[in-house]
Amino acid sequence: MKLYQYLLIAGLSFGFASCDHLLEFEPGDVILAEDAIQSTEDLQRLLVSNYDVVANLYGGRVQIVNELRGPNFGAPDNSLDFTAVYNRETTFFTGINGGIYTDFYYAIYRSNVVIKNFDIVEDLSDEDRLRLEAEARFIRAICHWGAVKLYARPYGYTADNSHPGVPLRLEPSQDPLPRAAVGDVYQQIVADLTFAAENLPIENGVYATQDAAKAYLAQVHFLMGNYSETAAFATEVINSGRYTLDDDLDRFETDVVNPETVFGIVSMPNDFRSSWFRDNLRSDNNPTPQLAFSEDFAFFMSLSGGGDGRSAWLTAGTRALINRFNEKEYFNVPLAHLTMLHLMRAESYGELGTNLETAIADINAIRARAFGEGNNDLSADASSEDIITAARDEYRKETACEGHWTDQLLRRGAMGEAITIRGASWDCPGMSLQFSNTESTVQGFELNEEGGCL
Image: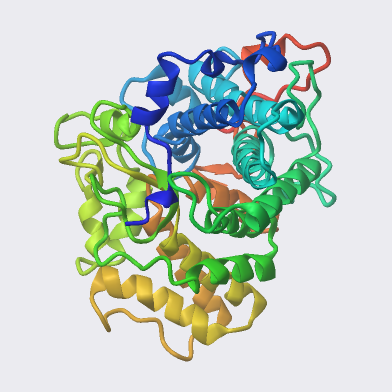
């Protein structure tokens, strides 16, 4: 089992947290690095604490918020915070978006502390230094990327990507910073992930690997419209032979490392890693769960017919209840996986008009699992347009609840398509979450425009 694919779980990180002052580092604290960091082990523990923050972010919080901005979920049952996100009316007092924003920058801050304090550790080998920097830059990259997607207009919104992004923090400082341009944020994300892909180990215990960085580079380039780069990085991971498409439709597995997950979170009993999914989406233990699929998504799924095994992920009715996480108290959460890479590569080849045979094979591999071998295959003479449409349809189905579909709609809108999301234009005010209250008090900080989508 490839345990190196996953983020560190709570059991290990909580063990450190119970007794180690290193894990108390937070933005706003005065950190005397020369007192707190004295050995390679200290740096490693600080890095471990950073993985823990990322696991808390992506145990469902970020995914659910991103789905609420898009068309896959219906109106929340009664949560005021969820409703504010769904209505695209967040303010800097909305707790959920403020908490996510703060945690992104906790992780970024800790990464910068690691990177900037190598010289004070006497026993640090060159090999450990390179690995620690690569891991810290990987975490810094995926957190800057998570933040810029939620709190700023998408890449491509302006021709030169000079529109406001998020603060770009590359130093362990809490001094106020303005919003960097989206283009500058993406440039740094690509630089950090490239460094990680070149310097992380192939196997790295439960931490980030070369493949993890490459899988994220494929995703980032996909949103940038760099389809050659997307296909190249996806192909490197697909052809590595270290991952295989799962035989069934369940990537959110309990106690088993899923064979197609390149990077993800391991959850164990009582660690609450997957509790946001469990508590808000499960429909078997709650007749009125907080969240359900939208009528639009239920109709979209119905177009596949009863032969699509993914139709079991919902129960149609007054509300289209979500069954994907039923009968599970805890489960592992995939963040980058082989299915995603196959479908991004297929659409990229469709956009480029090249390697169409490979693109068709990518799509049919996913459909064979859902419909059965040889059923509903894409024709061998499918056009580029057919491939793009099929790849997008399969991507929406396969990543339901995973928080990626809204990003894809925004990418397509920024590339010039007339995209409407729940009756409003993709670029309406309110699609971007409002910044937290901490930033609203900074003089001159540019907040997002509020409301205007309904």
